[in-house]
Length: 137
Image (cartoon, rainbow, N blue to C red; front, side, top):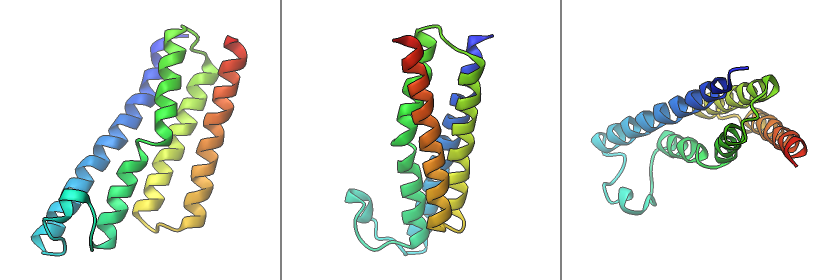
């Protein structure tokens, strides 16, 4: 097993995050040009803004919540030199769940579906952490 294969799901997560940064930037620029946002909004990110700007910002912020545990686990697995095929599978399942979560949030934003996908991804990550800890301790 090539241990560097665990990096590909991490790269996919970084690409998602970078995409969301760009999307958020253009959503903000376009809303400011349309005068739908006051420039003072960007001082504290409070005030009236179009819904799509709030959704864009929240979707980006989400990439620095649950995925932090993903990045830490992949780094730890690499540090312990314990990359397995199961790790690669869990990593990709988690990444797909994050892409689906973002897709739902940026499109229909239907909370029940978004919650199901989020919960699934979180459970994948928790189970993966448990397996790692049982194997390492």
